[in-house]
Length: 266
Image (cartoon, rainbow, N blue to C red; front, side):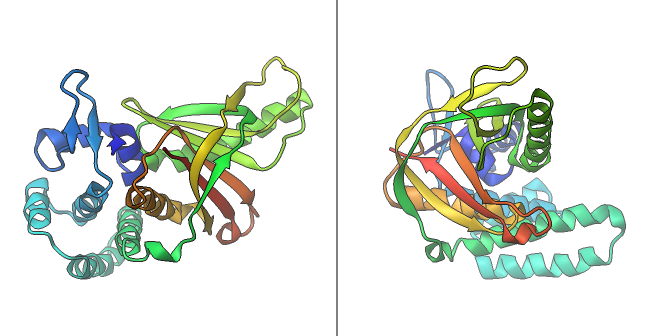
């Protein structure tokens, strides 16, 4: 089961919109705590969310989306619908290009659902990591990419100004909550306190599921969804903030990036 923040992060949607979908009966949480009101979602509900967002980006109204997903449209049929709209979008004006990119990403995620076994997942412990870091809270995973890169740039600029050498590899951590996603960008740091330098320690984790993502950040969301499905299939639960460890980041070749996804579990 996932809290609303983690479900929003994995699905690429804001917490506010998830609450709206709950209110109109389009995507209802698997359970709601009667005392706290906290919403919890099943990992299997990501498949429904993927279809809702894909159809919404195709221009369907929410009422039409509900009718289609309630009829359990298959991946093959939905793929056909997406590809048809993709052809139409290419003929539209420049303002529609961002919508086309969202359709392509959602299509790729839906296709990934049947290929999870191609990834090599590992179970291992995670060491404690002391980071020099900067962080920011965002409403949805769509905002993460626009935030994390600049956070690293600002961090490196700050460390350079302070005469502190950044450690390696870079680490990003994400913590979902009802308010959104806290995105942390950091590098290992074992030096003394320095005025103007924020330091945070990610605690050691006794058990985690990890997988290597090879390629650009544009497709990393697919790997995260596959990892969480693997966790669910293994009878495990998410436990604590997830991490991305950037083992190779050639800035002139984003398709050659090597990123390790790390999710603590219990």
